[in-house]
Length: 362
Picture: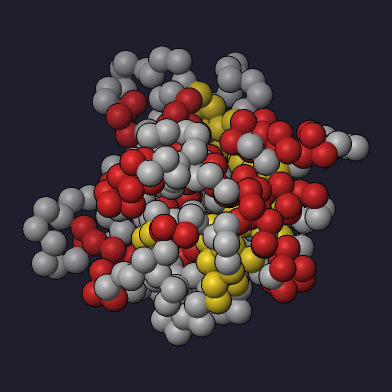
């Protein structure tokens, strides 16, 4: 990585934002490289394309919008979910579409996509720091592209024949030793550069899903949507043992429930609570069942206001960040065949309701 970053800076191949160190590097000629995506059969046939938010992929995002495809972009660092969908304003001109394809446009014109949305992505475009003609890829070292793909497998958004492409400068195409790769690393099928399109014919399997024994409690806290996916896979009978739970893990510990810090003392109620609304709760659902479910997702609130007769509940969290994390964890949750509606409550204070602390006996 350092060699690539240094080479691009020293030879003035890099483009804004600079310096390119510790980034997916933007480079001069990136838009030219992006234009060749239109030659891919996968681009022609797909209605939904997932493109990372990196600067050198701006031309791919623009091409997708101009072709009226559904453009999916990962949420920043996967903090609030998996995808956002870019929705240009009605009658958007080419100039407006160009703005929508920028990082600012991704922020201004995006709407979240729930886990239950039936997405079928035929083309995934990722950023890279280095890539080999064999299709082996190195990112900036944080593993988000690999994790995003694994989560897409878990949600059924990609199939075995989904095409993965990357856009790089020619100098980023290098030999990569296979021993540097692990089983969770994403490989690519096509490499687009300013001068050529390389079909890698890569035979190495792509990630087959989330490898839970490589996921730590710390990562679960950083990426709350993992709690939701883990709950689903556990319900499906899959082994979801985490890295910290393995017998030989030296510093095993229990995960911290969201919101537990705000229950230090019953006599000292939390201040400035943020409330989450949960609706479409099935008739006959017991509060104990509901509590057990959200506890499984590590989204336990400071307190619950249960309104089962109205098919809803209100969950109080210590602050907005904790509430946002809980909303992400609970997105797409189903109870009794009903997909629950989960969002920040419009009214943050409610009077005359019966509060039930999470540690109250049933």
